[in-house]
View 1 (tube, rainbow, N blue to C red):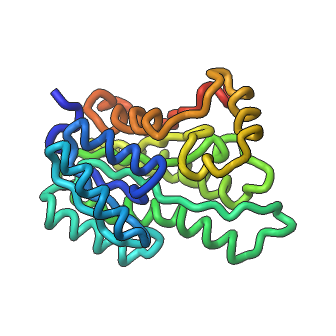
View 2 (cartoon, helix red, strand yellow):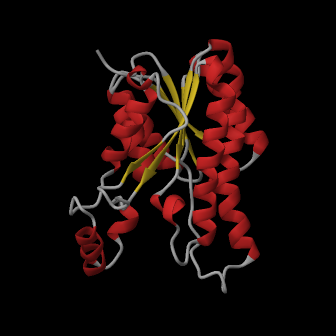
Length: 248
């Protein structure tokens, strides 16, 4: 029995990195996947095909979750195409790192808009169908940085900490309708982005982690499968750190 059989998931920002890992793992577990992408049309088409090879329905939507109306349209399009929305994974995010002295107002606003406001936009867009179904799992991607802060990432840390407060509030509001809201806080995850970093720097980071390795997108995806499935039916309002012991 696949853990997400016949469930439909919306995953934002799924054409690379953690989002792609989640999309793959969900499809393997039987979920139909509606995913969003920003600009990479070819990567989206490729991903559609790869996900469909697991025998599930998969469709990419070019949509900017940071725009309120776009999020509303996405939810209604997915509902029309797939019939239900059972799982929402708010994964889309950006960084614009700089010391506070140097962060521009524009760079602060942009990170809050893409990382935090998008979570509000999409959650608001899916709660009606979920309330009708009296079931749903919302999974929001935060970061260890949202839990402990990081020099040079005040904007990113604020957006990721905001996600935690938002998710806990939604858990309280929607629990009576059997809609759950949880957070995954990844630590140092090795993706295409980290592959461009200096190998010595990366080694140093790995050594500082109790499990002595960086995480993989699959590590995050497995935590998301648990939170999306009925295995976690009595868990809501929680933050699960998937960080190899970084914050221990």
